[in-house]
Figure 1 (tube, rainbow, N blue to C red):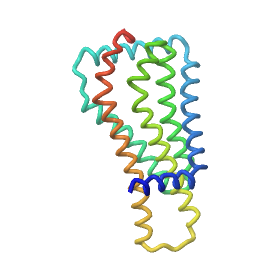
Figure 2: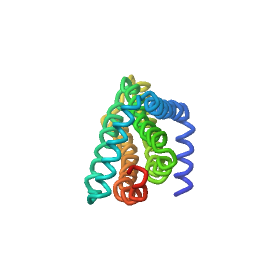
Figure 3: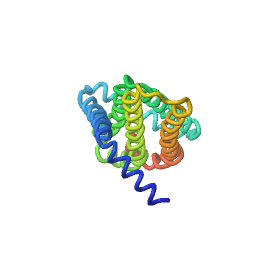
Figure 4: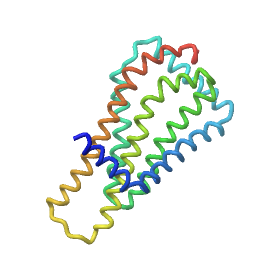
Length: 211
């Protein structure tokens, strides 16, 4: 079973290598743009953002952190991107939208990491390493997978647009596409669990960074 799964995954990467390169470019572009945006901010903007972060973490550490509310918020954010990417994969014109959505999500990651490291130096780097990087290393491959599946489905529908499929065949293709994306969405939920229930405890170790 595991050998079959491994073979299917390898085959999937080989068949969609170009799509992975395209989505990978969107990820790199988004992260890089986020980093450059931080550099383009003036001192006043950075100071305002730093004050907000200090206030946010200060309240989070002093008050009881609502992990369930945080979890629901994380899931809702992921669901919005998931829904838009899923919709964009149903039609070929949605292909550029998929690229943009993956880029936007990557922008947030690049901006957050770049600001924390540039503003808080070693403390910020340690905070990123312990509190942000674990779920980020899960989120990025998931969004790449969502993007590739959406692009592949949109291109496949365009190539077969003149072919006549039965209602059962159309439903089977639709169900397979949706199921694959839902599996990745479930993995995103696992990342949200870590971010909501584990990261807050780790954040307490870095009170000295934001005080």
